[in-house]
Length: 114
Length: 110
Image (cartoon, rainbow over all chains, first blue to last red; front, side):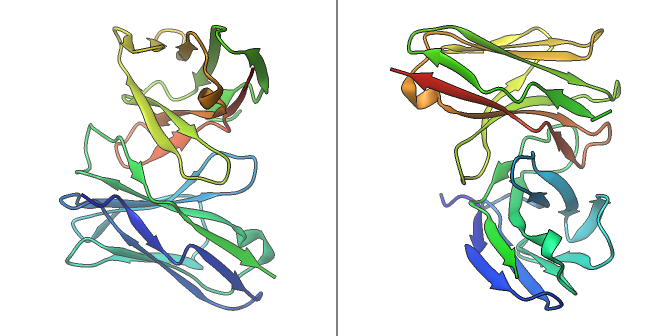
């Protein structure tokens, strides 16, 4: 079975632009979470979606938004990009939300804002 | 205070050594605990879940002390391939998010 897949793998954008990142979870997994990882830090939680509904949001500005589709894939959108948005964006897939929260990560999208 | 704190290292050890990493967490409501491994410029990969009774997987042993809000990872007989950053992870009290420490870097030398 395929693992979590993310696209694109690398992206360069200019300040002020908008970006959309995509994620397909492991087959059968209904929960998708997004994390931002800047160099030297652990991943920081952005969003979780389960059954197409937002179940949680981290401490990120409204420029960040996401959605989940009927096939459980997900998109993360970031508007009005800032230099500080440069990071590795990770998508994590889990079988469900609830007490078991181990997550399996995709290879990430490395976003560079110039 | 960070929600999950780890010694950043690096821990530089010879092959065959035993090395231990520690982690503390601040949210006493956390229910799930994990160690992830992350290689340079790669995604985190689940190493093991951590259970209250402690658990072992080959050369790796994890312990949890809820009273002290402390998690540990012991690696025995270190291999060169163990060189990576080890991330301590707890759930955020509610089930929907994982909180990561900044990681402890391990370098295993020949």
